[in-house]
Length: 141
Image (cartoon, rainbow, N blue to C red):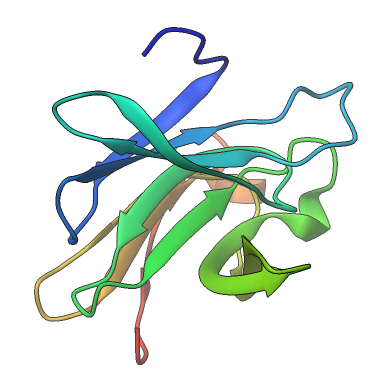
């Protein structure tokens, strides 16, 4: 995609013909990461949404079709975690709202299983610093 800056995640939407591209924010920027919804196969940008996520690193759709994002949050570990991306409107325009569902320090990747469990990998901490971790998150996604 021409002009894509810091594209870090991509996932096909369960609602064709869209593909969702996640762009991480620049560390020096006050703006959050963005989500770009692209029409396939034309590669036209259908929608671009600004988020309040610091460093988006992964995207996943749950079996129910809800979009989730992992925020690495390099400069604010308290903000790191997994977020549900909800539809929202502001001033009559389409926007999104990030709702934290799990606090995870430095998540890297995530995937849903068909039965609805969410698996997340993260950098290790403490005794597990060198090996990282694999987390299973359950709930109503």
